[in-house]
Image 1 (cartoon, rainbow, N blue to C red):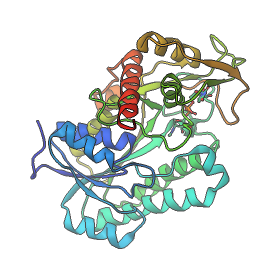
Image 2 (tube, protein in one colour):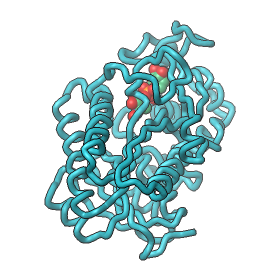
Image 3 (cartoon, rainbow, N blue to C red):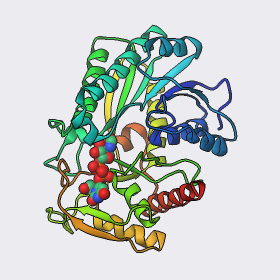
Length: 347
Ligand code: WQD
């Protein structure tokens, strides 16, 4: 059911970003009315054009920094919100090591401002964007939500762990909000229309955009960071989840919170496919799906990389009635189609 103007309004911070924009599509398709807040510091306004092409209409968007208390208060005052999905955060692991205060200030202050505005304007539901990075290198795989969090590998990862604790403590203080923290594994791919997708700024840190840019000739070669791990082919293992599966998990989380009758609620849920893939298998699968030969070399390990991490998704299946439905091949096909569309538009 497509959204209409009187559909329940959901504030989507970072809604012009990679995961945020795909979640906006799923929200509208599920009958919600998204209200985007984005300062475009790590996203592009072209995402709004892509959303218009997919949805056939504009989405409300405020060009605001989530730490701007007056502007955020005005938005809560004006828009009758029923929930918030909080994506907006700085997320470059390497940059967070070099500039920790920038990350603690931005990522934590924006969350705390939301946790003050929500009860003030009686907005009950919050879905928070957390990360599998809070697990570090789990001893047991697949990793469950009961696995103790390890000391974060970076200030970025630490802001996610601290954010979860802030939310838990606020809920335990009986502030009337119901919250779900979704721990993402590795989001990849793009909307099948190729109207929206991942827009890495500068040289991509993440594997899939580096692969597609290498295949497109933008990068001369991909470096595989180490093949001497204790894994099936020596390369690291990750849980790569299609961004549309991840988007749909957010809608399911909102529905679950809507159905929750208590005034307060807090839970954490892994959002992944439940399957681990090695880097070399990603490369092989991409070459098959895209029909291109990828130029890559084996290099040294990357500092901070964990050897293997992939999700136990039993809880997501049970609590959210959700499971990933798109294959790795589909994720890589959609990522490649998006890269080719990007290259056409920049020619
Ligand atoms: C995946 C694998 C690399 C690039 C990051 C964040 C995490 C989360 C998901 C936000 C690793 C290898 C990569 C390259 C390579 N983001 N690789 N050559 O590090 O698992 O997780 O994104 O929450 O917080 O840390 O993702 O895509 O960077 O790396 O060999 O050029 O690909 O070593 O094994 P990562 P990634």
